[in-house]
Image 1 (cartoon, rainbow, N blue to C red):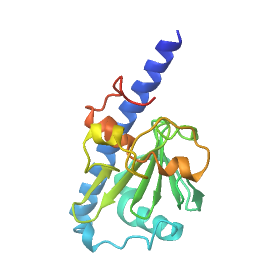
Image 2: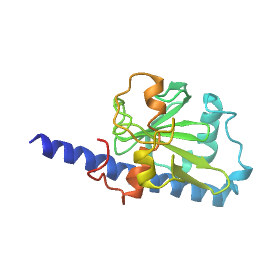
Image 3: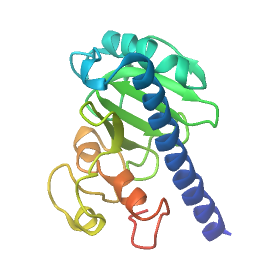
Image 4: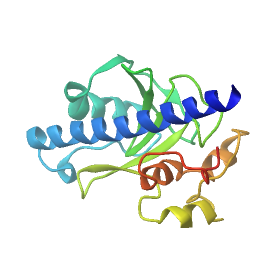
Length: 185
């Protein structure tokens, strides 16, 4: 029975990650059609600028996304950022902080950085959202010991643990949106 539960959890995470990636990029595409190239958009000053993140969401994303809840208030994230959190209709959520997007497949659950917390980044010059580590190969990420571009099995034990496991969404994406046996679940 525990194996069935774990397999179900993995499937939920992978499906919600893929859906989020697709929905967010569709919203960016529609916004680019209406608002011009992202390189001309007004982005928040940095990932601590929660008011700028709120304005960014309201200006460029709000009308292109279906969501359950969005409050324009400062939210602490697992990463060393502050932003605004948007809860989606499937029970997932994301935090927008500057060009950084922290995705939570299950809103409110934030214990494991490789299961519950995934990092993406909007690239202004490509009009698209990418998983952090998109520029590395899957095997490189899994074997990498660099400070920020790897995917490890780790509980959240403070800011340091969160920072060293940023590229897990990229590993899942490069695995065909599946959590394979070698993934550090």
